[in-house]
Length: 484
Image (cartoon, rainbow, N blue to C red; front, side, top):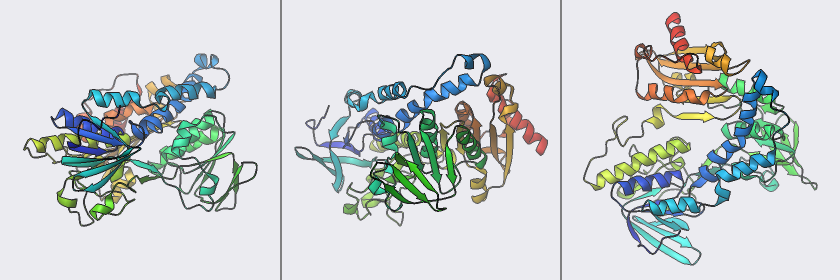
């Protein structure tokens, strides 16, 4: 429902009703304040309708089939190919058919006012909402929060805009699987969609100007690349797409920097994100529209000199501040920010000390990510290269997951690897990466160890159950002990 008749003044006004905006509003209201969220599209945002949920639904059937086929008896029961229509129908259930009424009702039940329309900052603690039947001006007594997220970045490839490429939105919401799909970009979205569409029967070609998955440890990207090639995906790595043309038959022809020509029915652009800050009123505050927002430790928006803008009432949470462009980290920021705003309203100081109640320390020290490719990649904290670049003295400890009893039982021919990055001076874990089937469930143990700054001497007493893949922790510690 749309609730603009309740009033036009609130303690907090949030622009954007995605998961970040929802969580800020929820924590503010739980803290005894009033909140309104402004949304121009669907309540629930990118993650619910065009990213996290629908894309993982596209990937899940194929993952289950692969797991069954890795076992001799179960594999005999799995015949034929996936039914794309059935996969897409299940995807539709996770998006509620792109109907946000359920999430809008949740806002109402939580005591949060929803104002549908395009919100723009027009003054100090003032947001004007453009609606079909006019405008509504909302005023915030305490804070305005920008939580407008990000959208796909279109690279400067000649002719690309003219071929009307897919972005992650079209890939997540597709109604039919194309026969041939070209993907520009070898990051998370490109790699996951290559996995998904290859399994759904498309002939997939992926073009990347770097190695696959450049944001994670190289060994993880290499294993995913090997698996994609084995699944029939053509990889063109360390080259650029330089020209795109759609001919009269509807086919797209991509010319690469090595003069290779890739033919496809559709092209998916997956070359990063850009902030949705073009038209939220930044110019009224002396800021540049279209840029990522700078924030301080409290998530207050700052100018280029690091000073809070206009007295410090404007905040930015989630993708728009580029601290960690991941939904779960945006929600983490939102919880901390909402609680901090409520605490200040009660006359309390916000606790912004490292890992304090209102701090977002994990954005710097323990960013978590699972990449749902085949095989999965799970990572938290620093890669070895990032740690060295940050001036850390480190130890690198690697373990073949295929040598773990629980992994061998999990799947015949299990292939995978795990890595610990250890701060040599403090003897604590600062980074962990694993690649292999179902390694996502290993991640939170590493996250707890990193955020808790648990010394490796203490981790010896965290006994993994046998036979599980978690036994990798014992093997990593044993390897570390032998190598020292």
